[in-house]
Image (cartoon, rainbow, N blue to C red; front, side, top):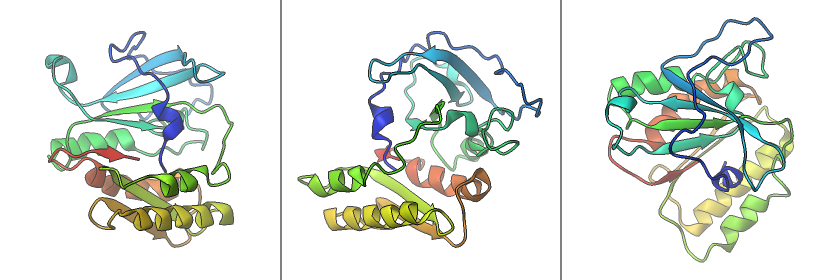
Amino acid sequence: MLLFCLLLMKFNYGWVGATAREPSNPSQIPHTLTGDIRFVKNFHSRFLAQDRDIVIYLPPGYDTNPSRRYPVLYMQDGQNLFDAATSFFPGAERHFDERAQALIAERAIRPLIIVGVYSTGLYCQWDDEMIVRYVQSLPRKSDQRIWLSVGTGEADRFLSSTRSLRQALVARGWKEGSDFSYSETSGAQHNPNAWTPGVDRLLEFLFPPKASKHIL
């Protein structure tokens, strides 16, 4: 889905406060971090009531070429992206670090930065389909690639709203298979085990070797 709430956050490119330390691990589940992972504790945004921890995946060679610019993928539920020890699905993570590391090495995707913003347990789910109405109100299609997916085993309101968003995007001019990817996975539910098999396709679509604009 389009992460407009994350786009409101002003992220500091200088990685102020970032370290390579592993996060606390009260669960004693082994950490499963891969690659260059850094953390920012209690990041403050003037748009949000609560400070958030942030976890950052950096591509291979990031520190050797400080002037190079990279695309950035911002994601919610940062504690679930890279580490089974911090995930609120005990022992299950989404493996974005392992898959990004492998796909970059294979030159299947562009090197990128992944910024995960920890959630606080508060969700807007679909906020009465606010994002659908936003797409419908656009004066014209924007130049962005969009990935949208859902499992048919998710809550009915998630499935219905995702389908409504698909219809709105197509009506506004996005072309499936070109600048828009949509998929429904039969029986898939709302958990990392269902989402992880689609990580490669998501990264390959949004970050192909050739430069492209994107939004998730």
